[in-house]
Amino acid sequence: MTVRFKTTDVDGLKLFYREAGDPSRPTVLLLHGFPSASHMFRDLIPELADNYHVVAPDLPGFGMTEQPDRGQFAYNFENIANVVDRFTEVIGVDKFAVYVFDYGAPVGFRLAVKHPERITAIVTQNGNTYLEGVSEAFAPVQAYWKEPNQTNRDALRGFLAPETTLFQYTHGVADPTMVSPDGRNLDDHYLARSGNDEIQLDLLLDYQTNVALYDTIQAYLRQHQPPLLAIWGKNDPFFIPPGAEAFRRDVPAADIRFVDSGHFALETHASEIGAAMREFLAKHVG
View (tube, rainbow, N blue to C red):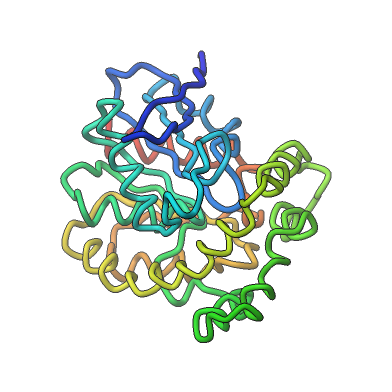
């Protein structure tokens, strides 16, 4: 297996992505979350690339993708989804299964609502789209939504601190020594770039648009019944297990599984998640 590290032009934006596997085989699009980038899939990509064409972009403002000034690019989830939509067109991918995690969920589900015919299957790993899945950890963010003033904005800067990144990676993990420091240290490096803090705070404010879209996404799921695997780190402090179980309300045939891990479940359970994905994709995608 060979992973290639590429950059392509998406309407003037230099977008970095990882690619592996035979492009003639079914494509799996991997969408990362906060505060990470496509490097979070470093252990999952080898689990899939023998059978699938795997593509993992860094979202705008994350990882190695270009970080335009906020005056040139509005950092909201609709714009990010539009960039990923165009990215798939630029690289010539017209149908794909999508793996969504954390911030990748509102991006991937926007693509599914917009282009239901292009989505062959959905794998959601702690990628929420139900109110039941939102924990009390979001209370400070919700306070900012209600009163988007500077005081409430500044109160969220702790979400960008290295201690919070460490918490996200290790909370709910039975043995934290299993979690490599490489991923979280790289995330902290990207968060520390000049201007990135304001970008992340913009996205935390805009996250309310994702919650507002839940009904629309659920209607898409009910209407189109995409093959769906929800595989959840059951100890996630942010997106809790009821959010996974809720998918069965709209997709009764959804495959719901839990692993004994936290938010970044791939750090400890990439082989288990990879095996579940291979089984699921073989059944529904080929």
